[in-house]
Amino acid sequence: MKRGNWRSSGRDRHRHHNQSQWRSRHRSLPGFYFDPEKNRYFRLLPGHNNCNPLTKEGLQKKEEEKKRSALLAEDDAPRTGLNSTLLLQKRHLGLLPPSSYSRLIHEVKVSGMQRHRLEVQSSNSTSPNTDNFHLIVADSACERVFTVNDVSHGGCKYGIMNFHGCRKDSLSVEMCDNLYFTNRKVNSVCWASVTHTDSHVLLCLVGISQTPGCVSLLPASLFSNFNPDQPGMLCSFKISTAWSCAWCLNPQADKTFSTGLSRRVIVTDAVTGHRATYLAGSDVLAQQFALRAPVLFNGCRSGEIFSIDLRQRDRGRSHGWKTSHFFQDSAITSVQLLQDENYLLAADMLGKIKLWDIRVKRSVKQYEGHHNEYAYLPIHVNEPEGLLLAVGQDCYTRLWSLHDRRLLRTIPSPHPAGKDSIPNVVFSSQLGGSRGLPGLLMAVHHDLYYYSYNKDYQKGLTLEGQC
Image (cartoon, rainbow, N blue to C red):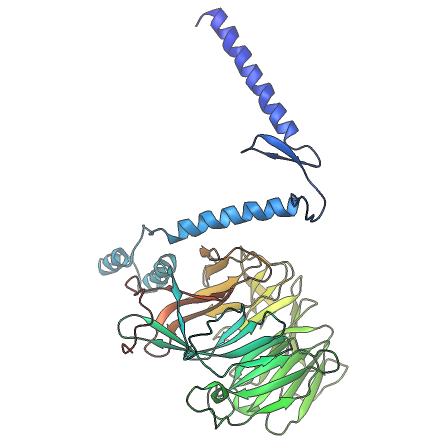
C-alpha cells in the first residue's frame, strides 16, 4: 500500500470514529429522543401528555409492541428441528433411556404447539362475547371452565364453558346461557366438591359501599342449559373481603373450605357453618389444601409461607398451630403442592418461582424468566407432562421443564400487552374430558385460543355432530 493511500484510509477511519462518538454522545441527550428512522430529535415530556404523547413510557411500550409482533410472527411460523419420529428411532436403537424419551417427547410437543382461535358456541348467537376475560378456572376433569368476565359498565359476569374433545381431533366449546351478573369484583374462585366431585363453585366477592364482602357457594348446575330448575345447595357466607380461597378434599375435613383475608385465615364447614379463625401476620394472598392430610398451605403478602394442620386445636395469638413456615423475598401470589406433598412451588411479586422441600424448609430449585412486579398472578403445574406454566406481567406465557428447570417455550400474547390484557391459561393432558385433547387454553381480551399438541389438529373446531 502506498503511503498516501495509507494516510487517506487512516484519516477516513479517524473521521468515522469521530462520527460514531458524535452519534453515541448526541443520541443520549437528556430530555430528547433520537428517532433513527426520521434521523431527528424529539423532545421528551414527563409523564403522559395528550398534546404530545412522546414520553419514555410511550417509547418503551412502542418497542415492546414491536418485539411482541415480531415474536408472534416467528411463533406462527412452522418449527423445525428435533421431532417425535427421530426420538422414537433413537429409542428403538437404544440411544435413549425410557425416562429421557418421555421427557424429550413432551418438550418436542411443547415446542411444536400451534395457536388456533376457538369459536365459543351459544344458543344466543346474536350476543357474542365482547367482555374481557378476568379469570378462568378448570374443573379437575378439564371438561368445564368457570369464567369471570369484566363488564364494560362496571362489575362482572360469570358462567361456565363446556369443552368436548371429538374423535376427529377437534375441540368444541359451548358457553352456558345462564350467566350471572354482579356489580362487585371477584377476587378468587375455586371448584368445590359438596355433593360430588366439582359439584359447586366457591366465589369470593369484594364488598362495595354499604354491602360487605361475601363468599358464595354456587352449584354448577345453576349454569346448566338443560337443568336450570334444580340448582342444588346454594349458600352465601358473610366473610369480609377475601383475597384467596381453597376447598379441602381430605375426608378428615370433609366439606370444608378456607378463605385468606387481611391478617387472618378463616376455615369454614360449608354444611354447619362452623368457623375456626387463625391469625396471620400479613394478608393471605394464596392458599391450597393438601390431599393426604387436612393441612392448609398459605402464602402471604409479607413473603411468608406457612401451613395449618386442621387437626391441631391450639389457635389464637401464639401461632403455635403453624406446622411449618418459611419465607420468600416478596409477596406470594401462588402456591402449588406437587403430588409428592413434601414439595411446594411458590411464586412471588419479584418474579421468583421456587420449589421448596417442606421437610427441611429449603428452596431446592428456582425457575428463571418469570416477570412480575406487583400483579396477582397464578402458576400452573402439570406433572404428567412434567411442565410448569406461568403468565407474566409482560403478558408472555412461559413453560418450564419441571424437573430440570429449563425454559422450554415463551409464547407472546396474541393481543398487545397491557395491565388489563394479561392472558389467563389452563393446561391439560385431556382438555375436554376423557376423550379430550392435550394442550394449552388461553383467554385474552374477549378471545379464546387453543395451543394444540396435535399437529393434525383441525381448524374446523365447531363442526356439529362429530362428537
